[in-house]
Length: 113
Length: 113
Image (tube, rainbow over all chains, first blue to last red; front, top):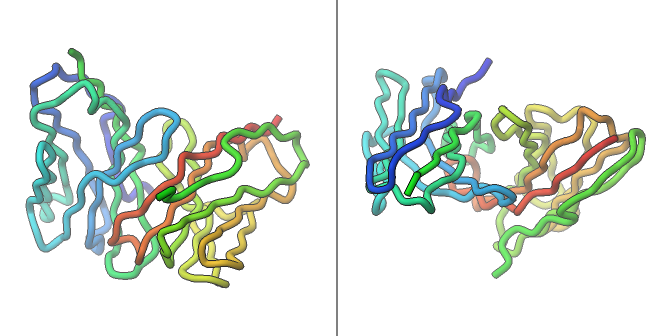
């Protein structure tokens, strides 16, 4: 039972355009959502997060949108740069001190020059 | 500031052999985790610890044991390696639980033949 789903294994965009990565979840108790970025042969690194009490969080070129009624979140990257090419993981947590992060399978983003 | 360091980076084991993966963090984090990543899969939690001297099972704990004798170290043991344990293993740490940013090590690529 996959509680966090990233239905697009890969996405290709042109440099300068917008990249939109999508994530769906099934557990309505999830309280906190995070995006991690992973380059080959490296560990994941935290990118941006959002609490369930918000519907948008922005950090520079990265914006995460949360639609709780649809159990859907998306990561927007504007403008996309070749250095953004990586695997992006969506993760969800029950919040607070709960230990568990539930990860999606990841989406490989390729930004073409 | 080293962050999270994993040792070794690569290892090849024969079926039935044992080994220990070492994770060290220098951020004074309470929570530590061991994940595995397999092709087409997200990150799956093996075991975790919420503080020195504590350990608990994650999603896929079978065939693994862990110990956290010191706050900064989290060891993952394979008692009798199997080909199904061929994977990339990531250690992570966080100040609190899932609602806070987790810092990952660079990964250990393990092949069991």
